[in-house]
Length: 147
Image: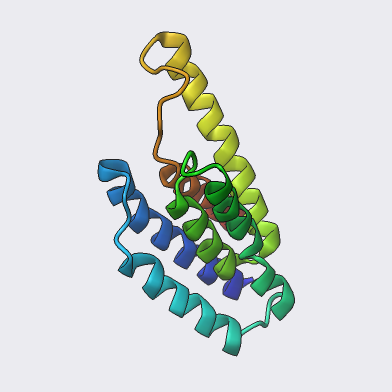
């Protein structure tokens, strides 16, 4: 369980580092996912003691699907969101990556619905999604620490 917590903590640190520039300028410096991708790939090559190596590498699939959706929708979804989810999934594995993505989508939908309902946002406004991914990963880390 210690290895999983360490990997989840690394994913949280990565997502929060990416969330700050995403919140300000809707752009992420390339070095942030690059450095953490290298760390996650190295960890996956040399340490897969808590889950199988296939599940760890498959963790990038949700992010790859989000990136593909961004390309198909011609930028309606940011490419950085998919890249960050893929790197996060490499740290945590596919099960946690799907849980993080689902929780982040629900949180974003709730916040945006409240924003539209109160009149602060319009239905087509763009939002920074990586802070929701970071919040979701943090909630998963807290839940894992409490169990």
